[in-house]
Image (cartoon, rainbow, N blue to C red):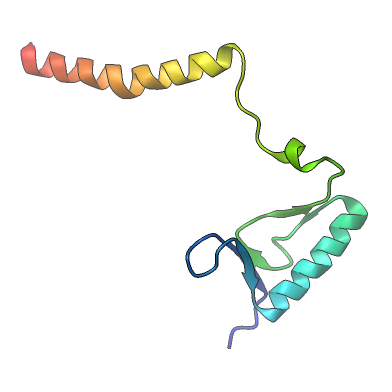
Length: 100
């Protein structure tokens, strides 16, 4: 049996939104959480195998930690450029190859 500590975050049918790990991994995660409460941020790569790299503590509210939407001019320019690159440019290339 492999006793290397590991922890994984699952979001599938078998483990719906769960943190899963072996005993050693969950104990190492517990220690990482305790350390993060003292120092605010702890890297976990040297402690256990995981699909995340940091355990962090913050005083922010839940809503403040969510990713924010791109606003302003970049909220318009980025989707427009992606549309041009992903749709218009390939259609133009197909037209050039087919009719010229």
